[in-house]
Amino acid sequence: MNKTNLVLKNARKLERDQQKTIIGGEFTGPRKCCEWDDVTGSCFLWVCNRCGCP
Image 1 (spheres, rainbow, N blue to C red):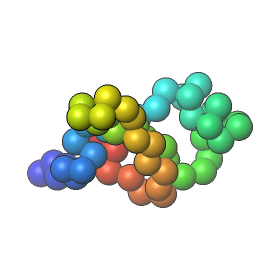
Image 2 (cartoon, rainbow, N blue to C red; image 1 turned 180 degrees about the horizontal axis):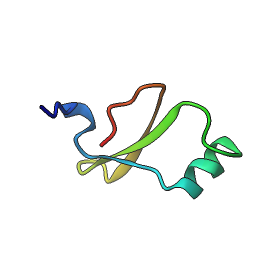
Image 3 (cartoon, helix red, strand yellow; image 1 turned 90 degrees about the vertical axis):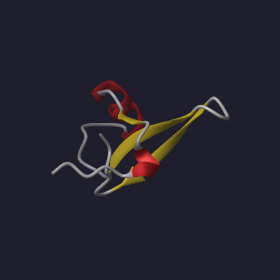
């Protein structure tokens, strides 16, 4: 059964190059994902160790 986090329903994983840019190297740290907000038209970056990113 696939459970989804409603808060992150619009989230998407960042591309590997974007991850490298953010953390300055290989992807070894916490996960980063971006949730698009249709209301504000902006992207909120989530940084967490065990994100529920799709």
